[in-house]
Length: 324
Image 1 (tube, rainbow, N blue to C red):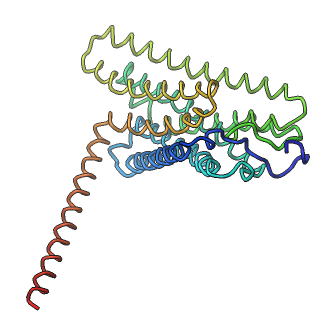
Image 2: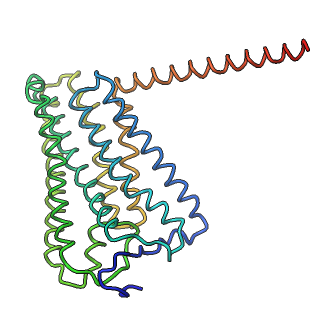
Image 3: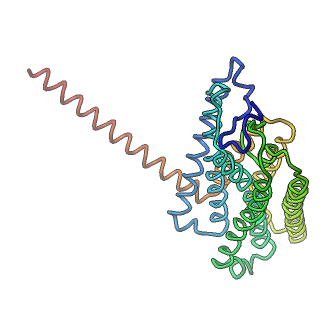
């Protein structure tokens, strides 16, 4: 099955072992509802930030970028994976071009999450360490530059990564991975992939070094400022805003590292951060909580109105029937 055609337009995905267990329906159901929650939560946050003018601040706009990235990355990969879980092994086929798009999206999602979180760390650093200069530094123009840089750098780095991978010819059709990524893509080649390995390793080292390094540097400076100033309001602000950012980053980092140790858990790399980001940031923001409370109150009021209307309608119907 592995070598039946050179440069075949159709590829076969490796069998997912989990579908052979008795609990595969439970796993698929859990994954589906987790994905559904991820979509609803991130769309909700993005719409709130877009609609409510009080949330048109750098911190919330950057967080909105994170939600958009979660939607972008997961909407390409997760639905296809869920469908493949329900298919027999012989029917798990994917076109080569769809495979490339999914691989690009997977790496774009991961890289953009790192670059956006790095920019969010810079935003928190300026807000806490130089609060008087924050408005002058984090202008709309600067925010636009940082946002474009986060997505642009990720696009260029991943584009080069995939460009190098598409260069060699293919002599295999079996994808030894439950989903599409760069490693599975260049494993289809029988040619020398030394350049791919070198660039992939360099790419990963630079991304993680820059990401972890920026976090350590910014949070070290924030900690020093908080300890030296001994300002309670500043410390409370730092604890509230930085703790959420740090928790999201650590969840994302450790979820990413789980790919190295366990392939099945690699699916959680997409689901867990994308599901928890709206909760962690949303529940820590007073503005977002206020808006959610208003929405809940409006929904409760509407449900009460509908219930009262239906009750009155039922009573009138019963009275008319009784009169007859």
